[in-house]
Length: 131
Image (cartoon, rainbow, N blue to C red; front, side):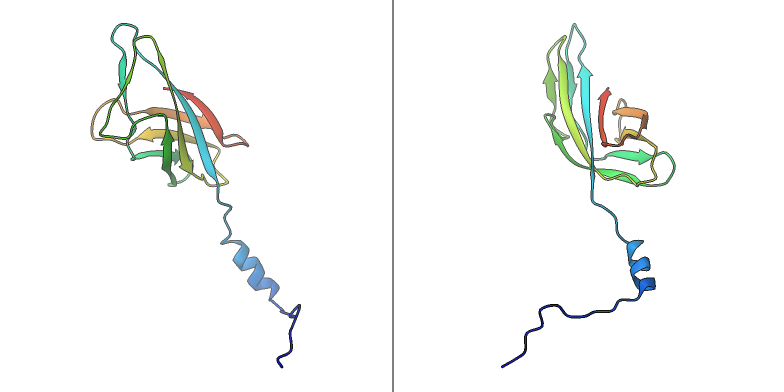
């Protein structure tokens, strides 16, 4: 009959543990709640492109759009009635811990993509932006 080891003794080098900690990154998300006011006379068409990112102002990092709520993805348009407000939420992959400010940019091959520059980082990574 094999013997059962309930708590094996494992010795791991302190140097190796310290090195491995540099690879650990806590998974997180950045949530951006958006408000888009339509024109009073004609209304507005709105959609989000999957090429929408958060660009860290202090590094080359960009956070990817993970999902969007209450807004259509390109190529479909969503109508916002005259004088009404579109409320939608964008969820992005995590920003680097050292990031203190970032830009929300919709990178698209046409004019008038969403752009919210210089958003100051907060402790919750939940933001409210008027576009």
